[in-house]
Length: 432
Image (cartoon, rainbow, N blue to C red; front, side):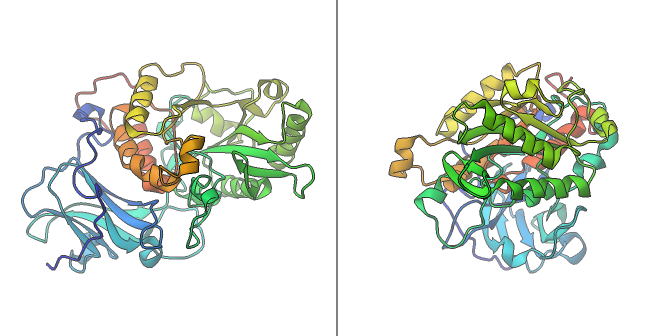
């Protein structure tokens, strides 16, 4: 076969960073089986965004093995005409390709059924014929209901839920970043797309602007981004169009609240007006099972990070506990998340906030290069950590630029493990 030129980025091809921990077969989401995935890089390269990455794990490579990206299903149409090809020299690895999502993916309206998006990845033996495993880039709008029998007995605080940190801080790349967007945009996809790709936990921060119309906005810190109504319309459309359970966590109030309980009451009333008919009642709790949520007829768990407001509401749940390291390096993030993993909360739902945080000085100096580069520096590792040991006890894992991870697939695989659908030997820790 001919080998296309690869877009080589430092540390992007070959072994994952040294911080990746080796997992035993029992503490691997796929039970040590070879698997491949496609992710979407958050990086801006050559003035463009959404380059596709290929990822493989649990390989036993022989000389000449390779991982290829295709615009056809290689199992049925062969491995010729690969869009990219990467030699495999390690058991796990990632490579960024020259292919961009917008160039190869099938376009069309959002559909609420899982579908491949026109691009595949395959692990190919050196004979250039044998495909050991393959996968496609796909939507996941129904992954929970597809596993309903397995998930129904599981408690909300025990299921693995993939999440979007600052879910409302989204913006498609428009050809340039500003100093503000570099450190305020955390997602590439709008909320409806996030849910369609499999995210089920939305971390929301709300600003109140009494002299604007509308008065309610989605914020990231002091940065005002989108009208809150747009965010809520996406949530309503998804919940009404599927049977999925969604967790919407109103967690931050960075502008306009000023410890004023009256503003919180206004927001509570607005949320009831917009979401009340869909919201799961507080007669259930974080100790309830997913089956009980489905049985209630209301599948939107709406939590709120203000105890005084929650105490007086029949639809607002106690907030998800954020386990946030407030760190700006990969090593420190791993150290923090590992400590959380050894003693997670036992009385509430909780989220591992698996992203880096820049302090004011580093933002001013732009020493970390922005949230896209920060996400790129950790997302591959976050995938490996939560496919491995950290996935055993994980509840919610919230990330920046979620499509640069395989966190949705990790959640699906670990939930299969916890439910007993996927069995493998040598489980070192209890999954109960």
